[in-house]
Length: 188
Image 1: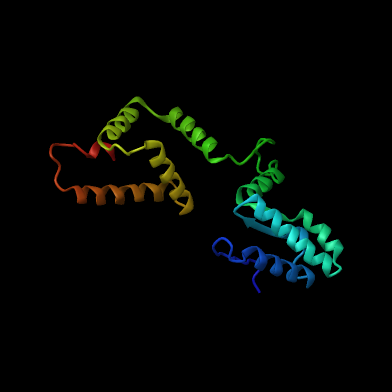
Image 2 (image 1 turned 180 degrees about the horizontal axis):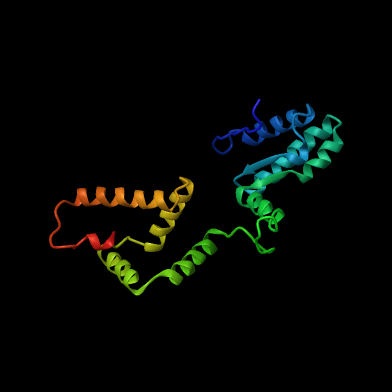
């Protein structure tokens, strides 16, 4: 029996009902400890609803102790759960005690700030030139995408360099012969 259950479905299809039944069953049968449950939802409202439904089911079965212990479960959005885990283990990870998960806008600002600290004038002018040629090109979004893909695919520096080489060769192959010496190679 696996300890991980993934339930995906569209809105209004009964995910919360199914999850609450599954959690109640596992807790009632002692296969899961209420305080050890981790459950993610897309909204805070769904997390609160899930917890309340499970509590009500447990209380109806006379398992009030388990229902009370469910308050210590980690039920929430992915960001809320990750933030809680980071805060619980902040010292073990050597982080600043007020560490928090950034929302999307704050994360974008921090990425821009980090990029500006390593961006040279030459690179900046290349990105400006690229932006003028490709109207929809946003270099911060492009860099963010590369960072995310590298992280999701567990690419270290060596693997990222190999990926860059393959990508460059593929793009140059698609472009064909250059119009003049180095006309497009300067961007890669």
